[in-house]
Image 1 (cartoon, rainbow, N blue to C red):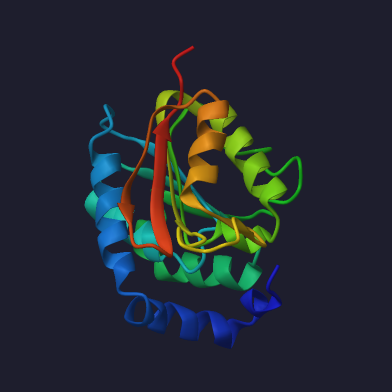
Image 2 (image 1 turned 45 degrees about the vertical axis):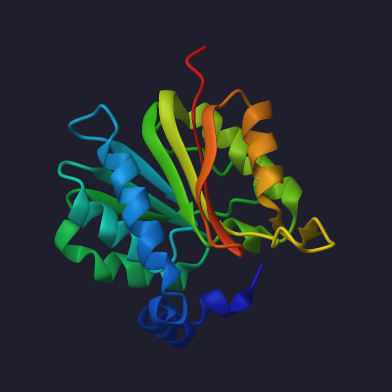
Length: 204
């Protein structure tokens, strides 16, 4: 994984510039917030995987009344930045240092949660086996009908290669969710290089 994520100055610059460099994130964030708003809960619990500097956390907490948020990231610098950024919401959110490549990464996290989300992040696990394992564990953490939504950098559909490190084509993500028993699997937002992949946990 990229060790720049541990550098405080790099994290601050990333947080300040990423939306300008990737303006499509604005539409993706709006979509994620809308999907969480549509959940049948007055106080949804949401886990964000690889939460980074708290940009999506801010959108969710601003946009969803009563939302309880847990963000995990393996970078202490990211966690520290996010905690400071979201200090006004400290009663409704927490950030934890978690390495998603470890088998026990979900220990201590809430279960039966309403949604698990991620944005432009899981590809940094570098290998698809780790991404697939995270999908599987997420299915175990979600309540029946809970939302899984990964807004992710993907391999472009016209590429001759199906895999690039931790990136894959949209179809791979959809197949993994299908294999895990997710329902209503879809990719409603696709920019070619960046796509929202989502599904709802099977009700058993």
